[in-house]
Length: 150
Image 1 (cartoon, rainbow, N blue to C red):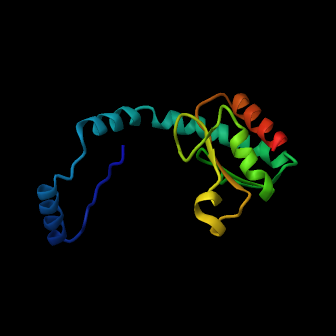
Image 2 (image 1 turned 180 degrees about the vertical axis):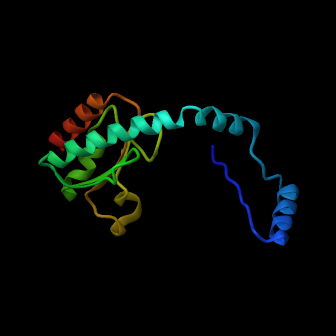
């Protein structure tokens, strides 16, 4: 669900936003609102688990000889790392558990190369791994196999 709120300080802007919302029907659908509320109940647990997994994966990536650089701030489930330019595509497509797709923060792990979409703004060997809720050993086995075969 993609939801949000706008809270202006200016009463005139508040009134204008309210009128636009009433004319355009800009409100969350009941299903999206229910999904959001249901997801919020387990958000803390999911983020904690994804952070623990990402920390361990980042630590292991730091030690792997095929990895040139690891970018991980120490929280959250997103680990960014670099491999040799000519190995990136092979790594991102050699995994079986980790889906090769853009999907950040989900319960299933995913990985992608932004270079394919953004070109030279992104280092060619940069990969983004979003750690899901799978077992850390299963994620690492899949990733290590991809790093070895690419």
